[in-house]
Length: 157
Image 1: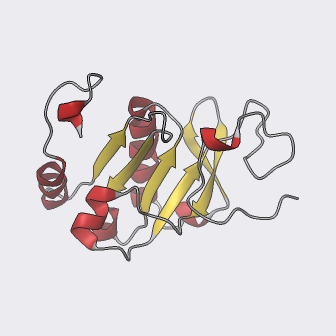
Image 2: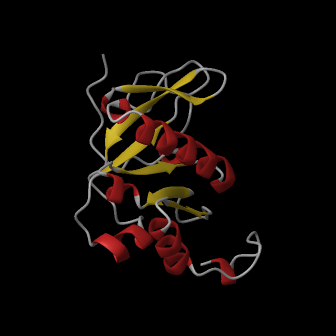
Image 3: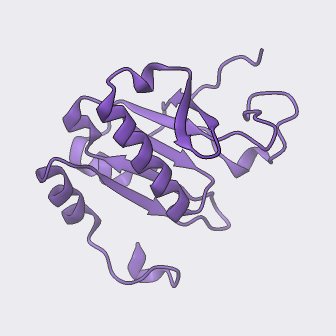
């Protein structure tokens, strides 16, 4: 956790922070820096209380990832159908689309699993490359391990 990572601003109490945010009617976002063994990951805890799937994003700096997740959560709470779309607009500027992929593996979502157990709906937000291609599409410009997928990708068109 943060106590052991020099990139963090100080100690943290992720579970207590999540409880406080949820009790106030909000959600919490946890960001984890990547290292040699894995890409960075960020995820929400508390959207379950609003009958929305928890959100997850991989491969981005935690600060950027947290901003993206907060914006997506705001849009999801404002419009119940927002996360049902195959592609999600209005989250990232300029108007890039993110893809939503139902997460099968939520093992990286430690705080969420501590609060809700292993069975909760989660959606991974997938970011495109500079040509708007996604990891499952031919010609995607980033390495496979740059953005690990937590679900089963759709068949490329």
